[in-house]
Amino acid sequence: MRNKAFIGPIGDDLPSLIPIVFALTIFFASFNAALSTFDSKNNSFADDLDALKVARIMRSNGYIVNKENFDQLCGLVEVRSLKFVAGLAEFNTTPEDSLDPLKPYNFTFFEPSGLMKPIDQLFYGNASGNFYCTNLKDPSTFDSGVLQYKNAIVRTYPVILEKDRGTDAQGGKLGIIAAPMQLVVVAWR
Amino acid sequence: MNSKAQAAVTDALLLLLVVGILSTSLVLFSINYGKTVQKYITDQYAVDFETTALKTMLYSSIPRDMPSALSPNPTVYNSDQVDYLLAVVKEDYLDDAALNDNTKNVLKNASKIAFKPLNRSYDYMFLIQTMETPTRFVFLYINASNPDGTGREEYYCNAKSVENVQSFLESVGAFNPVVSGIKLSKINPSTKDADTVSAVAELAMWTGASFKNNSGNLVLESVKILPASIDLNTVKFDASNIWGCAPENFPAEAGCPGVLVCKQITTN
Image 1 (cartoon, each protein chain N blue to C red):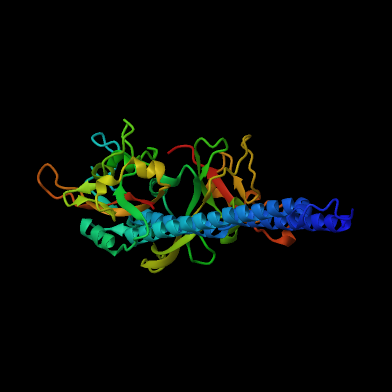
Image 2 (image 1 turned 180 degrees about the vertical axis):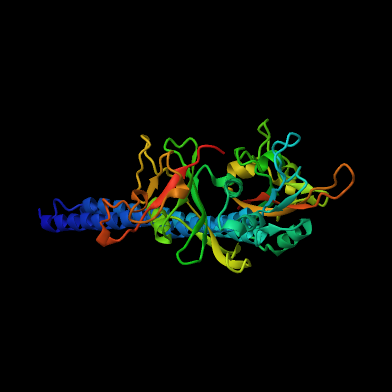
């Protein structure tokens, strides 16, 4: 008679087990979510700081003399945790528009067709070569996928690049100008 | 026996409550985690950008040719003569310790070129001030968002003291000023020699927000906009001038703290 309602040591505590299991599930789910968030944010901050580091080395004192100077700076970058491409580009499509304060900024990574510009056309180049620096083994793999799917970090900075104006009609040297350009840094994991 | 079972359920519910509170705290903490670091990274980027922008502005080449029929818009690419912008500023300052409209225009345009990548999202102030006593603002320019957020508004400004500029910058929100020392020269009237004048070029940028509302009225008390009829150069920062001191707000015994006085630039 005394044991009529008794259905075993676990069965008797079944109503109390439900909230305990529920509590443990909530705890471990939130613990897991929090750890994922911490991990994801820490990775994001590390990438941001590495991108800043790349930019600081590449822009140096903000005055780039020539391709040799640019390549020297490129050689100083020792970032291995993420991939990057950093290069000099005009603010606008043409150098003249780039120095026109009334022309709005229209630098873009893409061609009108929607495809990404080849890296040689994306960044400024002269007789010495193109002004870009990357740790990619094959620079042609820098494509639209980087910007669309890889959570790429893009930073831009104004810098000065000394440009040779070439010669005039009589063959006289026109001299060197200090032209404002932009350093574009793209970094991704 | 029944009482024991009730106690076990109550204990379990209490455990659920405690775990619920802990889990909520953990989730909230993880959401807010890293905001300080994110702000630090954003500030570092802003400082890096401003530092190189200031150097880009001061060291860029500008054309020295005057517009002509053959070349109505001379650029550094088609001018016979080019010079560093800072050299042009020094040259202009030398004779009368002031900059003419053309040099101000050159400085304004240089800042607009350097800020092209960010000018949709940031407003900025660019100034050159001497380190004399009292401080003189040789050039003070603000490029700000317009109230409807579709374009930009530009202002030349002046102030009684550095505190007025500081007060304005504090009222627009977070900002990260960068400063670079420069040397100017001016003719000493008695000796006719060129005296060196220490000056600083300062650049401060902040997240774009117009300091006017949609009706065109100012939302900041730290700045006053002059009407078109008043010339900025005629503003005197003393107790006689309401633009400088607003005596109705600052009685004589409280001194004359002044405000930043700006005039909107209507043409390029």
